[in-house]
Image 1 (cartoon, protein in one colour):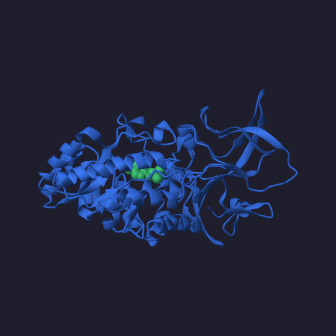
Image 2 (tube, rainbow, N blue to C red):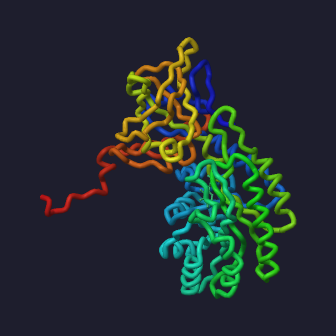
Length: 420
Ligand SMILES: *Cc1c(COP(=O)(O)O)cnc(C)c1O
């Protein structure tokens, strides 16, 4: 469910007319609906309301401070994967005791920062990382709360580049080493074992891989407890898929919750979740204007002013995004377009042979479901300034990240003296 709808054939974000907004902001720009963000987090929260689950929003999906502030006001915690994300979460008012820290390559600086602020849990992904955390926590006279991220060796994820729970993936502790590493952790002075963690992939569109992995982990918890490990928390990661187009029907959070409650009820643990895409994905769009329509020999190209540096998902993961005209004219015939950006790469393409209303230069389009892994993955490739981000709330809107001008874009660059 989202709040992007047509009124008299003009696309609105909540109560804001996108045609008028595009005149004011200039294109391209990201736009998020606050009501949709709130709805998504509350649907997830309600699905687990009879448990004391911690919902730690995965900051990498969309890390804009205003988005984090909205989610903080809904009592969300945060799952961070870098020192930068940790600082963003704190700045947005997410308390450290609701922050978990994931990722395979936490540096000394990042671990130190997390220890200093007192985060809820480190999700540890290797033995060397565990040793590093033990040493740093010991040096600071602290005990670091940890879960080991276990790789359950289960295939999941809509695309090989977003599958993380197979033994060949770089993530987590190999299944066969889990028990042994928990035993080592138990002997470490500055480590406080709190739980078990896993995250098997992203855009998972059915419950089966989750259920397989969660049952494996539940059995592991029994074993660990028999070994003498006090396991009080179970972090099940994120990964729940969202509908990217018509006909797509990933599981509803309620069905996901029901399955999880069944699997975990006997364990008596606090559940932690790290949803990202499910919260932000359908709460955001990328609004872009047609620059040219070009007739090739075999196909027609719709050339937009947005490009792969603004939204890399189609180029990186072959991702599908619906594309909606911002103004619908019912009599307009349909055309098949390759929808592309201006960047000098053949992968700079949003859609191939997509049926859309015949377009002309100046026509606006909305690339839908772009709220997660959109703005957070942007770059300035081809020296294109980062696109602005807008937050809409009813009839209000606010620019929550400005479009940098040329001077700002190059502000960190310097020509050495010797080059004159
Ligand atoms: C990316 C990531 C998530 C969020 O995944 P979604 O598919 O966006 O829900 C959660 N946990 C970890 C460790 C991640 O890397």
